[in-house]
Amino acid sequence: MSKRHLDIIITEKVKKIREQKDIGPKQLSLGSGYYGELVNHVENPERKEKYNLYHLNDFAKFMKCSIKDFLPDEPF
Image (cartoon, rainbow, N blue to C red):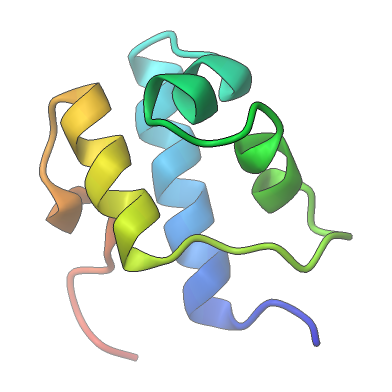
């Protein structure tokens, strides 16, 4: 199963905030309590892994932002 459009948008938003805060993929994964390759796997378009709400909540806590920052402003 390939990633859906919403999964791609969320992944791009997480990556943008992560890069703005100068946080590496492994640092975000481990700092949020997940296995070290989670973010790398999700950011790789050839892999099927994607974030769930628990990931996003833990990322928001780690990066000190709102979980809403990872979601699109409007439904599509």
